[in-house]
Length: 410
Image (cartoon, rainbow, N blue to C red; front, side, top):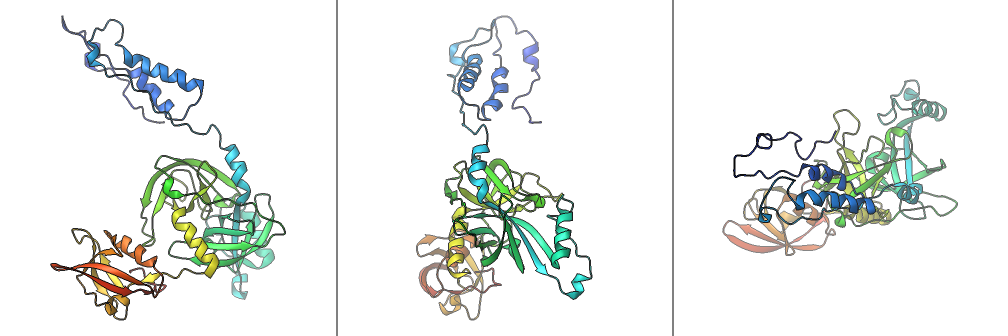
């Protein structure tokens, strides 16, 4: 039950008659009780009538109470954000492009004689029996079930890397139940994004990218996917926060959403009200294993370029400087606390204790900013580093190298 914005209990001033020659100013609790209803997005004539009801008690004191007009502020029209009365048109628009993904590995002879545990996304669901039968029939070990979405008519699908990682076979199910085998085009573990592709006899329905930079905290968002292997479903909520760092990599920059997502939703899309993908559902916080209203989606401004690179090259080739960094250098910048012996920073004559304040005139305030800035540069390209060394400032040029796969420092 939602908590009221104002208490229903009257104060002692409202219960005790005022002294002779004085008057009390009554509170406008009827208007306060109506306010949460307005914020839910009522529209049309009902909204106008409700707005008038809200303004009326504030415009004049209650009967029997005399007060100077100067004690009352002019009535302020309530802010009404129009929201959808139903998500059904949006579901019909985007639903055919959302897919379910099952991944499996071939069992060896030892595994075939051992009962394999089901993944958490399937165990305990109505589909547990179906998956066990499939595993016995095909001699496979089911690794898990996830979600994805088509981004062009040629069958290119975006999902999470952890959904398809380690799979020998990937099976994609469309909303109409049609199944296709899929191949892995490429994956990026640092952002947990993967691209797979199916070959269908006809053009596929697909959804476009939206600009996540235009998404505000409080905006509607609709998540789609395959929770617990149950099949395609949708949930709706709002964007609760932006820029969340959940400690998975230096590239964390998640939307926090309260639209319920659960195991199996990984890799599915989150849509704005225009039917554009603005985030890829990736993780949840849950002490129970189910949704508690805290989910995380990687914004399209990060995902879309990664996807294009994976489609072209099958991998992401990031720049690397070869330093270990620490925040809190003071007066802006990040401090170098370690240098790789054979890395670009050593060759550029950077030193431990140097504070990097900018890259190519782009100000740097945190280690994450520097890591992202360098990672976005092509290997073998040259960058200008503006540094502070004790009491001196200077600029040094460094030729960035290829980021080692296991290296999460810059």
